Image 1 (cartoon, one colour):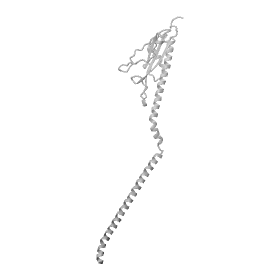
Image 2 (cartoon, rainbow, N blue to C red):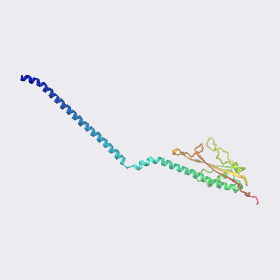
Image 3 (tube, rainbow, N blue to C red):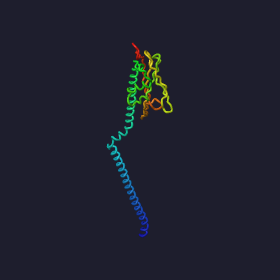
Image 4 (cartoon, rainbow, N blue to C red):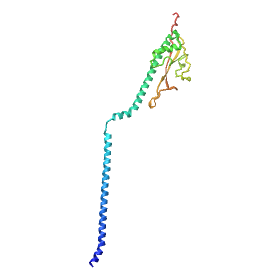
Length: 231
C-alpha cells in the first residue's frame, strides 16, 4: 500500500519540480531583461545628457564670435559702402561739370569767345582746365551751343546719343556763338563711367552702360565791343 502511494505521489513531485525549475528559469530571464533594459536606459540617458552638454558648450563658447558676426554682415556692409562711394563720385563729377559750364557760359555772356573767334574744338579745350583729372577732356566732352529766338524755345532736355560701330558718338552738335543780345543755350555733356553695384544699384542711363552728365546754361549775351571796333 505504501509503495502504491509513493508511486502516485512521484508524478506530482516531478511536476512540481519541473514547475519550480521553469519558474526559476523564467525569473532569471526576466531579471536579465530588466538589467539589460536598465543598462540601455542609462546609456540613452547618458548619451542625451552628453549631447545636451555639447550643445550647451557650443552655444556658450564665444571664441570667434566676432569673426562670425562680421562674415554675416560683410557682404551688405561692403555693398552699401560701394553704393555710397559711387553715388558720391557721380554727384561730385556732376557738380564739377556744372561749375565748368558756368565759367564757360560767362565767357560767352561777356563776348570773350565771340571776340576771340574760338571754334568749337577750341572752346571745348578751354573748358578742360576747369574739369577734374578723371574727365577725359577734350575728347570725351561734348558741347552743344544754340542761338534761339526766345527763352521759351530753349531746349533743355537731354539729347538721345547715337553711336557708330566703334561706340563713338555720331551726333552733330551745333556751335552758334550769336552776338550781342542773343539768347544762347549751352549744353555741356559727358559720358561718365559707372559700374553695376550690388543690391541692384545701377546709375547708368545710356545703352553703353555709362551715365550721361549734362549741364545747361541759358543766358542772353550782354552788349560788348567787337575786337578792333571803336567806341
